[in-house]
Image (cartoon, rainbow, N blue to C red):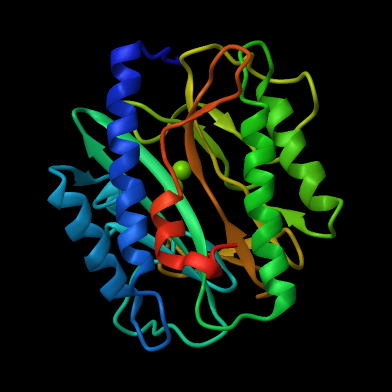
Length: 262
Ligand code: MG
Ligand code: MG
């Protein structure tokens, strides 16, 4: 069942999305060598709760934390830990969800820790750009496959690979609703997009092989070859003609990072 959101519901989704955006902006202030991912999780949770929202991921299918924090070869679903200490040259994906007024927001950003190798910065840039290529396709009358195709073509043309085991999704009263939003696809295939659909688009793009494995903790997804992976995500509403409306935003991250915003 795909839920079409009313204008009032879109306003609530936008409110939740803005809380996520602010939490990511707050976390951005603390990303530097020596910081543990557990500490960042605390910042995210505190910020979410300060707006009267609940962290969407906490206890989701038993997930133990408020944020998913995934370093270097970890693609997604990294569990924050006292023993994971960020170091110069790392990349770290922070994925955040917040629930307020019965609706979720969901967004992710991959940050650089200090100075990062130019080749890895290129991976981040390409992944982020591919997210916006996908968002451009989220228009009434287009299809889910148009989004996946735009992301896939953009990344593969630049020599990267696309993770297929994990996908974007509808967002609403549940964190994960129908339809699935893969990052690969054929033009003109899949579910037809309709005004009022709200979806999370979230490319997960690898430097080496596209294949991934799940660690023994049952959550952490990493690349098979341990080469770096990047992840960017926005929750967006499908509209007519105009291109999708963003429910989430990277503007608070941009304010914090300034010149270092890529
Ligand atoms: Mg997410
Ligand atoms: Mg998501």
